[in-house]
Length: 268
Image (cartoon, rainbow, N blue to C red):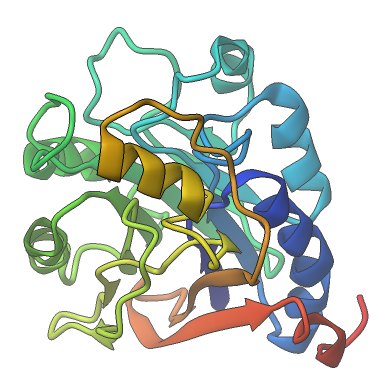
């Protein structure tokens, strides 16, 4: 089976290319499931119920989040009621949302989804390794295909999570830095890994935000509004091929789709 994981969707430019590309990618790439990190989908920070529904209509089957999970309070109701969206599982137990979810792929295979926050250069959270152990123990054993989004700042932490879960999950794919890495591989135990799958949004930017605004604050120390940029929009992610019987990965490929590329794919 083939699973597409889409990296951090940033603002309306990111949502627009998702809506244009995902239905075509499902056909052209023979995808069974599409999962996306959407923590930056609302104006570059957070997620709203309306945008959640927009992404689901666009063909996203499940959604992971990150450190901006609660930036928009209106998302609480979605986190409480919808079965295909997860919060970072190493937030406090009292926090709103699911620690993991199981969604059914187009080929009928159940797939478990979970995400975790890193600790380096991030808000204080529970240790991700032990949190991952608890989540994996809670997922029904018959659900063999398991996708982990590790939302972290440091590549060293991302590599630790990949090695720690190698052989126990289908894929460990990183998000948060918005910069795609070129280290996609199948680890020794059969887990697909990439430090960061990259951002889905405007690349003529500084990690999705207007260059002039970020530069002004960096050079002067004066606050500005870090508006979402608009140019050179790309969808970035990774396609993982998995064996539904073992839950292990058999392939991983980086994906980068520009606005110009979209029309080259098969129509939905």
